[in-house]
Amino acid sequence: MKSGKFITVFMILAVVLTMLAGCSGKNNSTENAADNTASTEPANEPATEATNAPEEKPAWMTEKFTLKYADGGDSKIEDDMMKAFMEKYPNITVEHDKSITFPPEPTLTAAAAAGTMPDVFGMKDIPLAITSDWLLDLSPYWDKDEESKQVYKNLAEMAVFNGKRYAMANFQFAEGVFVNKTLFEKNNVPLPSYNWTFDEMIDLAKKFSKPDQHYYGIGGPWGDLAFQEWVPMNNDNEIGWNTYDGEKFHFTNQQWIDAYNLKLELRRTKVDDVMTGEEKKKLWGDEGSWTFQKGHVAMAVDFSWNMGWIPGEMKKGGAGDVDFYPMPAGKAGQRIPTIVDFVGVSSTTKYPEAAYELAKFMTWGQEGFLKRIDIEKAAGQPVTKYPVADQPEVWAKLEANLTLPGEKEVMKLMSNAVPYPIVPGWNDFAAWDTENKFTEKLMSGEYKVADKAKEFEDKVNEFVASARAKMLENQ
Image 1: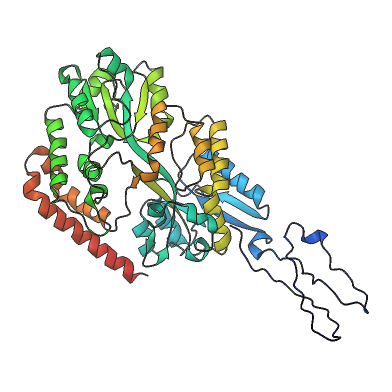
Image 2 (image 1 turned 90 degrees about the vertical axis):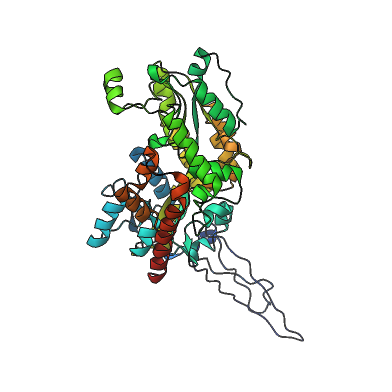
């Protein structure tokens, strides 16, 4: 949204005879200001209408300056987006800061120390960015931007702490289930409907379990089904990701314990993909092979960012025809977990309003998102991410570019999506967990989930409370 100072000068000419005449002026648009001139009235005739001086554009729309932008997206597409922004604002030059690499936090830390922070940048660890004082409070620009009201409320509130808006959501990556339709057909197993249930998914997974032949029913991202993260929230609308309620985790919730135990059971019975690196190397020559990609897993719980390559690669390699299903329903229906990326504006930028407009154009703003859809389509890139705002024109244009039938069903559920939250202290807890091999011992059976849930819950909430207090100290 354009903003700035608008200076209106009212010129009132009146001849006082027997009464006072008050006159009001008309606003001239910036575009027409050069064509409008104040009329000159004869001195002996009263003016019947006031005139306005031309509106002045804010300085950031007229001065020539440079902004630096850093994000981990496709370089060619981001460059084309920056070019489109510069066409809209020819006074602004946008440079792609490629010194910020993925994950961005290490190189952002170095840039902050050197005083070379980009004006606009993507990030993963917002609590770190806040405590490091990297981020500008965007509230003054967001609050007066009418278009910001279109951002879904749960997403709009994610990066707001203690009344300050430190970042804005840019895209949503949906978590769903890649289904190998060819494997279903070969095994004479009917495909489920898109409104399937969690119990159906588990029953189907068990049908495909042939570990002696290296075939499995199901697999998860990074080798972890992570049922405890999303199954409880699909059974209870009051529970969020991993039972987090915005302040605390609730690992003693029986649903969390049951979901965790089911994950362990499927791993023990080899319904889950438990293929070792040694086995993969022996079979395919690469210990890092993805078993699903090789056509040996019926269903893979994963994210839409793989939409850009996995269906094409599998079809090309003869590993199967793939569809992307919405997450199966629990007692609370089908709720789509999403991972949301964020973009922020540097606290050191000299041009905060222009930087805000750049961040918006590159991410959730309707004009920019429509442009991005065209650019990605021209580049042959399939749809992998979804909007964060209620913009029907954007959603309709995006839907027209979908390549998998199931993706349309995913899109229908996105208005009720549940984003992975911003959790201060989670990274500290994860480091503690790794150091103490807590999760590893749960997976091996050395620890029992029910016996350790309270200890696990107390520890994570301790880290969260400590990190929140630290964030408040730095505000």
